[in-house]
Image (cartoon, rainbow, N blue to C red; front, side):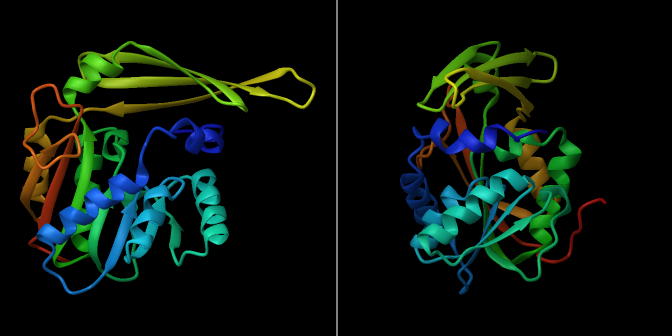
Length: 257
């Protein structure tokens, strides 16, 4: 999965996301369900660190993990510019290896959908259980089957900033509910011409039953399931589901290598 160009423009192309509002939403969930005394929070698949920074501003001791050097490079620049005490690690979340246990793990912005199959999801859930405090929280969101089939689908989206023009083309594989994504970037150069480059990646939608069974198998108790960043149950046409789970088998399970 490549983010070589996407990373440079990720923040400007996602300006529509209110990261502070999302962090405050996660904070409300944590305050509603948290049973541990500690304040260590893992932001898994943290990308350029936007949510990590907002959670740090809310008082959490944040560790951000991502598998993209390019994304983490931008996160580090933001950290030093803003003077926030966040630790960033470059790791594949399927091979998570932490030096201590977490009170809260969040995995936001459909990062779970970037895992290619259920075995990969099982590895991630098992690793989070391994490095969670007893009763530690795991909060994550996923794009729904509805969003993959009806919103992302075979559609094309365009984005334009002062620096780049992006054409985002989706191809839905109906048999697997995978959306293959092709991003064409046209970057304005100093001589006034445009340079073209491409990034490709994919997302896979998982059913609620699949995710809930895996959570139970890997040592979690499901505490809540909400639709579209609310505290209401998911509607049939909701585009994002947020799961809240409590680790009941901390440190006892290991993901497959």
